[in-house]
Image 1 (cartoon, rainbow, N blue to C red):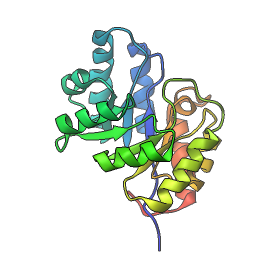
Image 2 (image 1 turned 180 degrees about the horizontal axis):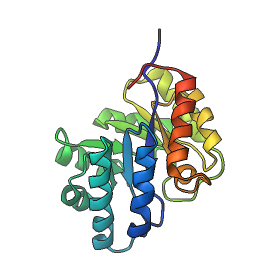
Image 3 (image 1 turned 90 degrees about the horizontal axis):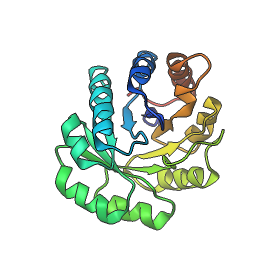
Image 4 (image 1 turned 90 degrees about the vertical axis):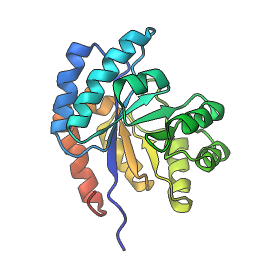
Length: 214
């Protein structure tokens, strides 16, 4: 019996000069299958975040990729995003679930233990995300995230996303953990061969891993 094919969950870089990022995003999306783009640049001003979100969401959606905005409900609505990612606590997650579902999906992040992950799923999160998007990645995924992904995938039905490391080869460890989605950030945007080559490589590794096509 085969399992669904894991898919890529792209995360925008921490710093996003829009004019430089959009060509990189377009290249990444031309490189092969990706399910989602999480838009979460480090910006102090909402106006700047909204500008990035609108442009990135539009480009992602034109390529059949779901656009997800991190934490900001107003930007999510103004950008016409497909979903919102909440990593600021269960109370904020509950509020987002009430406001956005069922029209938009709502994901849960900053889940560093089993209890919090289960609570997020019980509240109705559409996915759980194991990994940190508030710091630079190490070359490999954090062992705690791998352990949570292994546990979750063996017990629960809601899909889980596990953050890989900055080294593109680290996605194999995430695949072995049983993640439904592999989150990639620096491994794509900083890849020496460019984002398109990174996405091509990642999809080739996923194909070699096996599973039904999306």
